[in-house]
Amino acid sequence: MTLRTMRRHQGSRRAWWRASAGTVATLATVATALTAPGAAPSASATPRATLSLSTLEAGNGAYPTNTTKACKGKNPVQLEAWIWVPGLYRMVDVFNETHPGICVKLDDVGAGDTEYVKLTDAIKANSGVPDVAEVEFDELPSYEITHSVVNLAKYGANKYKKDFAPFAWQEVSQGSAVYAMPGDSGPMDLFCNSAELAKYHVTPGTTWAAFAKAAAAFHKADPKGYLTVFDPEDMQYLVSLMGQLGAFPFKWHGGSSVTVNFTGAKQMKFANYWQGLISAGGVKAAADFQNAFWSNLNNGTYACWVTSAWGPSYLAPNLTKASLGSWRTYPLPQWTAGANVAANWGGSTYPVFTASKHPAQAAEFSEWMNGTMKSWKIMYTAPSSLFPTYLPLLHDKTFLASGIPATGNTPLFDKAAAAAEHVKAVSWPPFMTYFLALTTMANVLNGKGTIPADFKTLQSTMTTYAKGQGFKVSS
View 1 (cartoon, helix red, strand yellow):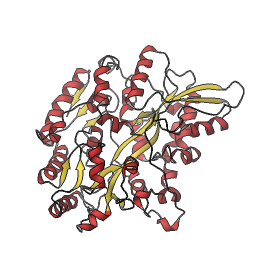
View 2: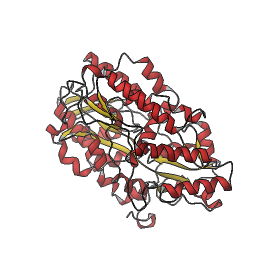
View 3: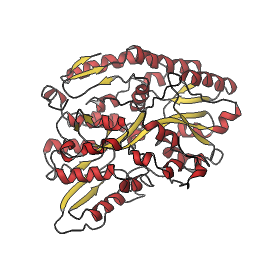
View 4: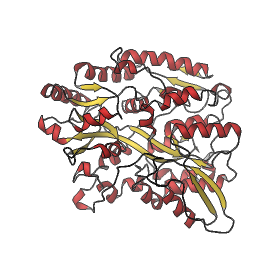
């Protein structure tokens, strides 16, 4: 779950990297010694469920996060799980009640980077490492490369492969090895104020070419308005959206070789497209997840948001009555007419750590948590409100028909659920912590740079960094 996205925009991600550079395991010492293997029903056709998505920030005190019922069974195996998503104690309670031989203690030690610092420190000290922890897709390789996570294939994880969106399974695997169970995700779509679009007779279109024309038409009709906002400094958002075009800039499949490519034909096509929209005035280059961002979505300055399945949950508590019920989801436009390629922004996995004294039982917990409908029926409801990678729920009629007050009588998740099975998997490199802390793309926001120019800088910066960590780099 990408709850840390908003924190990163408040500066914590970059501050964390500077403060803990000496804490993160040095990749140079391990890079040369790796052994890692290589149509939705209408709302009227099904009962509607209205999701309460007003509070999702972990650790805000609104929901207990580390309180579970007493475990059953005599002398059960004791496990510790670090999970920051609010409300998942409900899932842990059910697991403990139905697995009397295992007792899982749930701890919220902090979300995202806060957890990763503590986790990395514990691994280095070989003390206090949890059996299972929530680790985002982009961060998992950082633990793979240091051999800190268990290959779950030996505990039968591959039998769950058919139950997950293909991209999610690919991103937790290296060959036949499985280094975590996939959890939630964030298939990308458009979240638009239909009233604003109707006011100017604009539709976002089904292709990015049509989207560009719609952006120009909207801005012409309302010179103070923009069809959407684009935040190039949100690096995870940036590379996730690049992935739809096949322009994801990294490739790593275990081992000491990595590809860094920000200047190839597809990468520059992506950069020139978005820079063109910004320069023409149809799209605003600005930070997301800020007060001004929410205000501009509410007042119609931004008609649409290119976001993920979890995006509307952040907008929900900030909506004004004027726009309530006017929001609709639209499929992410395609680069090629008639194609069906999706992108994913965010999501978490649940690895078992090699320091665990009970890896079989820890694997059983991670597999049950992420691979059963009983667990997912809890996890997708408030306050957890996770968007699944688990196909049985993605095909569930009640789930597909669910909505929030912002979307009125229309479903919230149907477009994202359809997209989940068409996401292009990407190969996250084991140095995303460094990459996500870069401020290179701030040049676009302050008007001192362009996306194509900054991509060239990123090419140089990331190549130098990867080589310095002991990787053989190709482009």
